[in-house]
Amino acid sequence: DAGVIQSPRHEVTEMGQEVTLRCKPISGHNSLFWYRQTMMRGLELLIYFNNNVPIDDSGMPEDRFSAKMPNASFSTLKIQPSEPRDSAVYFCASSLFPENTEAFFGQGTRLTVV
Amino acid sequence: DAKTTQPPSMDCAEGRAANLPCNHSTISGNEYVYWYRQIHSQGPQYIIHGLKNNETNEMASLIITEDRKSSTLILPHATLRDTAVYYCIVLNAGGTSYGKLTFGQGTILTVHP
Image 1 (cartoon, rainbow over the protein chains, first blue to last red):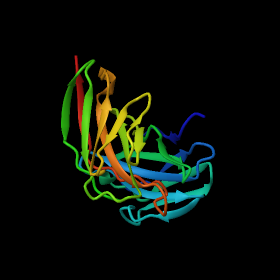
Image 2 (cartoon, rainbow over the protein chains, first blue to last red; image 1 turned 90 degrees about the horizontal axis):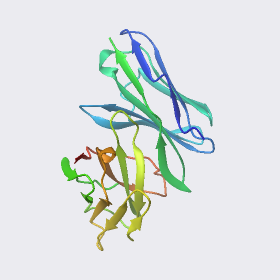
Image 3 (cartoon, each protein chain N blue to C red; image 1 turned 30 degrees about the vertical axis):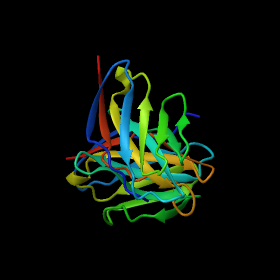
Image 4 (cartoon, rainbow over the protein chains, first blue to last red; image 1 turned 90 degrees about the vertical axis):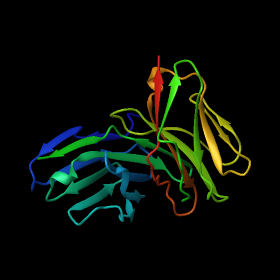
């Protein structure tokens, strides 16, 4: 397996634009997590899914953020409209719960909003 | 999940053992201790986990005290590539946790020549 695949790796956008981050989890995994990392706040859990169902989105900063998981092999994190303070590295991770709770992380998407 | 406390930074000489401590004094009986690391510009990487017995794998060893209130991650022969931020996380591996990880600030380990 190629691991967790995120795209794009880098995204630069203007304030107010819509941004969509994509994630392909490891095949067979049933839990998917979206994290955001900044220097100030470290790694924050935004939302997680189990069997494609959102379980907890309390980490989503505000209504501008939304996430979907239409099937077991794809998830998106959308920011609309984007703001400079959304600039961060966004990581996606997947795991097989409860059999194996080791989480595998993607390489991340570095988002810059100007 | 119980909270953890780690020193903000540590140094280690290449080839020597790196011993990274973690305090988790409020850990409950069904919570595991997990260790991840994050090398610069990469996603976090799983290292090892344990419940109460000491564990060893190809990357590291995990020593958990008998009262489970603290643990130590041991990298037996540190290399320059082990320079990273190391996170100690307590996780209820069952129930409704779904395996979600809550990261603290971790320990920045610098391995020097």
